[in-house]
Length: 83
Image (cartoon, one colour):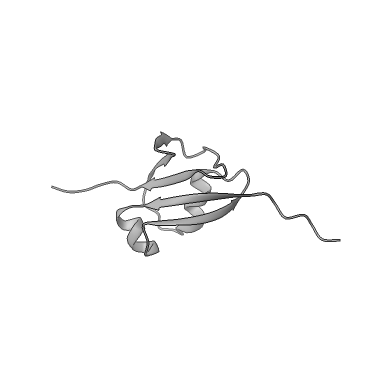
């Protein structure tokens, strides 16, 4: 008998600046196990060294420990520089 597959949440990921350059896209849909946090998804997609980022789910800033739900849009917001 096989183990049941974990429930998955489909999340639209939005990437900006250096993160967009590292992934080669500004948006993608990913499937994550139910209960995955914003920080855990970031860590799984961007191995060290990681830049500090802000998180926004569905256009609202959130904490890194926010759990992602099916249909969410997660934006990873790296620091902006300039002059």
